[in-house]
Structure formats: structure tokens, C-alpha cells
Amino acid sequence: MKESIRMIAVLTFFALLSGGILGWFNTFTEKRVEENRLKELIHSLQTVTGMDPRTDTYEIIKKEKDFEVYRILSGTEIKAYAIVGEGNGYQDKIRLIFGVSPDFSKILALKILEEKETPGLGARIESKEYLSQWKGKAATGSLKLVKTSTQNPYEVQAISGATISSTAVLKIVNKSVLRAKKIIKEGGK
Image 1 (cartoon, helix red, strand yellow):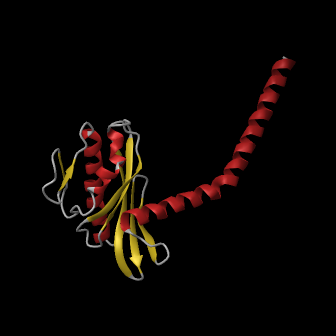
Image 2 (spheres, rainbow, N blue to C red; image 1 turned 90 degrees about the vertical axis):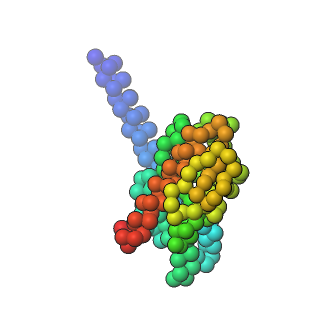
Image 3 (cartoon, rainbow, N blue to C red; image 1 turned 90 degrees about the horizontal axis):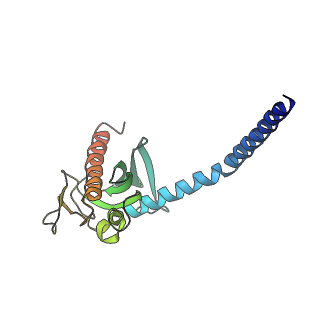
């Protein structure tokens, strides 16, 4: 009996000690983690909207778990919008960010933030060739996926062998544009 009480006391002591160390470590690193998140956000906003962090500012219009909208301002003039969207890919969630012109007429650029697609196939959604085709695509209507070369600004070429991943990115962009337009129209609420 005494031995079991002693074991419980020792285990409780080490559990409390471990919890205390983890809590301290979390407090110690929390600020640095937040600073790194902010740096990554600024870098992503620069990539997809051309934002100059020295002269331009951004406002958070909407921020949810799987959807975010940012307004990029140059002084008081709206320079662009950046939209973060998320959806299901072939293997897991795909999280991306893209910029659109102030009038939502065209996509400025697209960047994949997170993906766990099949290496060599679906993971090619992060390739320069795939991402570069998004520049200048129309944001005024639904984009469509094609297997051959694109013929108009409403078409995006699928990645051969990764149709599910290509379709997922397309769906995320189409859905996110519609949501963002509605939010902007309603005054950003």
C-alpha cells in the first residue's frame, strides 16, 4: 500500500513538473510564434497583391477558421484584396491565399499556404508553372478547369495526374471569391 501511494506521489510530482515546464515554455515562445505568423502573413500579402509593407497597409475585413479577407490600402485608396481560403484536397486540407483587383475583375496571384497532397502529383499545385497561370484570370465569374491549354480568362489548366488537387484549388478560389464579394458588398461584416 505504501509503495503504491509513493508511486502515485512521484507520478503526480513529475506530471505537475512537466506541466509547469510546458506552460512556461509556451509562455516563453508565444510572442515569437505570433511574430513569425505576422511575418508570414505580410510576406504572403506581398506575394499575392504586390503590397509594399513600407508604404501600404492592410485591414482585416473578415477572419474565420477557414476564410479570411484583407483589404490592402495605399494611403486611402484600395490597392487590392487578399483572400485566404481552405478546402479538401485529395489527401487533406488545402489552404491558399490569392489577391484580387479592387473591383474583383481579376486574380493578381495565388499562393498555396498548406497542402499535404501526393508528392510528385497533387503537390505540383505549388509549382511555379501551375501558380503562374492564375495571374490575370477573371474573378468576375466562375472559373472552369480544362485539361488542354486555356482559351480564355475563365479557364485554368488542370495538372495532369492531379485532377482532384487542381479541382480542389479551383473550388476553393471560386467559393472564396463569391464569399468575399458578398462580405465587401455588405460593408465588410
